[in-house]
Length: 265
Length: 312
Image (cartoon, rainbow over all chains, first blue to last red; front, side, top):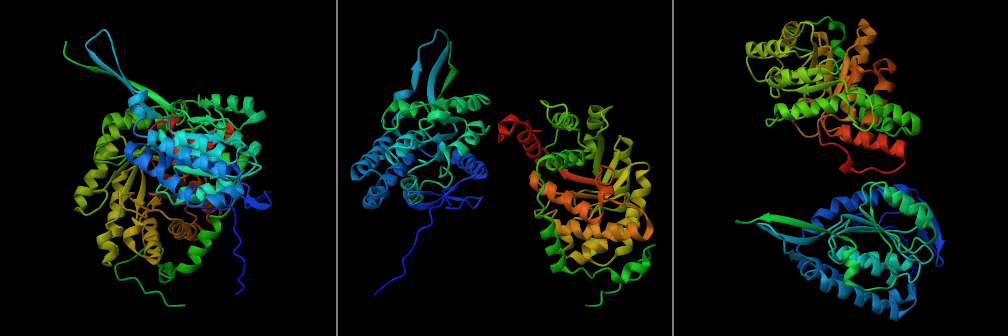
């Protein structure tokens, strides 16, 4: 029996929903029409991230790990689809493994990064990691899937909410990832993915006063301007690697809070 | 069109000729018109102008049981200079508090041009004997209130005792002396647009300087269609008598975008004469910060964060 083809509209992922760009624009990438986000989509995504972040940070570390592992589960079920949209199965497998690795660290990072500190006074002095807040991510063009996962996974593990700009040239894997995230118990708004022109969107993200940190791994030639814009509210600026897996990737999205707790003399 | 019900006896107002027309609000048309006006696009310089006007027309309000002199003092500082980082941002029109906090506000606002408004007449229910209400008003005025926000007795209004409502407003107006009187209709409790229009005309006939939508104590307070009904009543009174009565929208206006929609409606319904703090007010608390954020966005070109604006 012949069927009508079910064509897919490639949309943004903001606040747990899949809207078209507010501007109605699209651009062509990988042979498809993909939503071309506007500055107002950036604005909406930051609002969604800000609203979702406290609850995500307040979830138990164990629960965050479970939810991140669930992303890996959802991706594992769609390996062939992902493989078509990036460099192939190997990249997908490594992306899935990356989620699993970071998921495992969710309830361990406080032990490793935190400390109790010796001080010369009647205080119990200790340091604990806390999320920075809303993190903007300019993800690298290549590899389109692993690069994005490698940048957003550590930010999420630490309890941040992210607004990520997908690879401009190869955005389809990011949209597929959004669908995996949407079915993974990640609260709406914790992950927001935008497709579009990086040079148009990144400056709005970098200058946004309600974004607390920005990852410029994929910023290429825009980096200096974006760093200048980010300086206005002293954003934490991170330039990581497109393909790395490290506890320090998590810690670069964290703040360390040191408490001087008075004890008896 | 359905014939509007005649008003009961004892409803003797200077506007008597108009009364048969009260109660013929076309709900569908009012909501459609309010919806249309809300779609106007106000950008760039016009937006900045509208936002600054919205600030100048704001009654910065705190009406909580937990209000303290300290909180009111902080609110007054914010009223005088809403954005400490930008002296060009104008002061608000007034600070609106409970009577007991009027002296604090008066002292803090002295010489600033910002007025002190006080709610009175057994706010927010209005369910007290008249002598208590009058005393409430006299005390607030004696303590220095420039403006009195009174509530009408909705119980009397809804049971058809319009004359009681009318008389109370007249006497409260008398008790106000030089203070301006804003009459709160509490539209949520009135139930219909017909009642809103009827109460608006009644309040204006009784001497209100302003008519005001809501106490802010109930959900779904000020809405665009309700303001449109009230503005049309104001316009009708102006056309017939030449008297200009002010409008105050209060309750539920939290976003700068909404404030601009309310201003557009004022401009389109009663005209630019009303776009002044003397004739138009917005009662709000959290709205001000959103307006400040929008203004700074226009100035710096970057989207703003609540982290950089004061909490009252």
